[in-house]
Image (cartoon, rainbow, N blue to C red; front, side):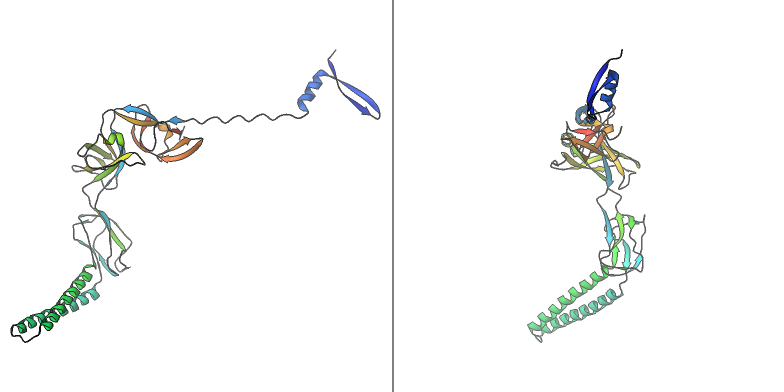
Length: 335
């Protein structure tokens, strides 16, 4: 006989009725009916984190940089007027003082002629006054006035020469035309309008920021290697910042490429210097985004931070030159 259980007494038209159900049915009803509790949501798993660690390596310090030259500038129109001629194009070599463009200068030339005539007249007046002074036929005041007129004429003549010179755009140093603006012959230009960009081809230099510890062991005269898609060359440290940047904890070094380098200004390169055992900060390569950023985890929050990377170690970790401190935690950037 199946086990039974009295479920409930009901009053049906004045008569109380007791229902007797099998125990199995009671269990089913209990499972299906009544108020049920929703299952608790599982706790979010803590994110996988990498810790920036200190390691001892025996590889050269590798720092990304760009080749540059000290002399690199746009040449501008220095006077208003119509561009008469553009004498160079991209790739043209220029020497110091070469005229690269000219403006129409008819008005300036006429003004110069007037200034020359005025100066010549004033100069003859002074000579005549000095001649009369020998016979005391002229007063001292008249001689002084003639000399004043000559000085004013000299200033006016110099200004006229200057106005003519400003109609010519000249190269301030030797180099090559690296770019040109959209200005063409016949266009009206104003002072400050760019014409062409001239870049020197030497000396080639790179500037790097080195961690304070490594920078202490590098002095002016130390040798390094510079390599990029356009070739490689040796370089020498020619300047070192006298102080350490407090924000990044790095010191700036300027190196000059030696020999006949095939690299060009603006080229992206890697500078390698040193090689003795040194302490560095490292993180796994998986923590670094393609754009050179890491996601830092701190106090339950994330923040995006730019880092400067150095050498890649054999174990898959990467040296962090600046941007992270030992003990900071970062999230994986890719699986």
